[in-house]
Image 1 (cartoon, rainbow, N blue to C red):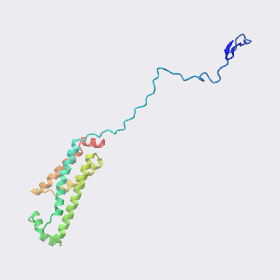
Image 2 (image 1 turned 30 degrees about the vertical axis):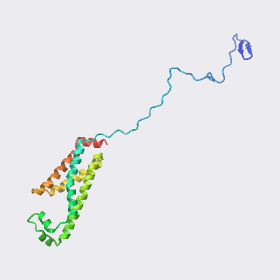
Image 3 (image 1 turned 180 degrees about the horizontal axis):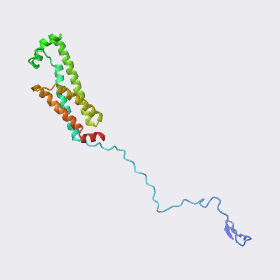
Image 4 (image 1 turned 45 degrees about the horizontal axis):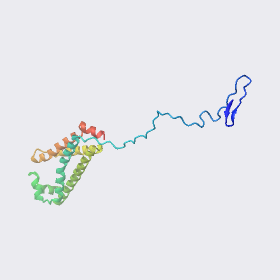
Length: 205
């Protein structure tokens, strides 16, 4: 016997002696039932937003700063000298006064079939080129402070060429000291830029 909407119903026994089973749910055992709820399950939390802020740059080592300062100081006298040679009028007597006494400028010009004005124009062109190269050297050296490895490479190459030029013009006279001081500064600056702290800093940027 079973109960339904119309009251109890009698289910006759089967021939084998047992009772017939109730009909199974055709929609499955979980049809119409809500999803199971577990009181111990915690609600899902939204994931924390990732921080995309770039890491702060590593501190610039003192060897880089000192090396760049030495390179700039070594090039500044040539910038000043080049600018003065371009804007300052120069006579033949004044040029002769700065040349060695045994060099007769007038006789040398006559033998070379060159006038003083032509010589003066050639000198000013040479100083203009030196000034531009010195300014470019200063700009590249300052760029190395930002960690650009190519700037350090270019500054090193120009510094070596500049040092060779100074060595070829080095003399034992008092004027040679003017050349010797920038030469020492150049060598010291290049060495500092390639010291271990400097190389590590450039490599990690």
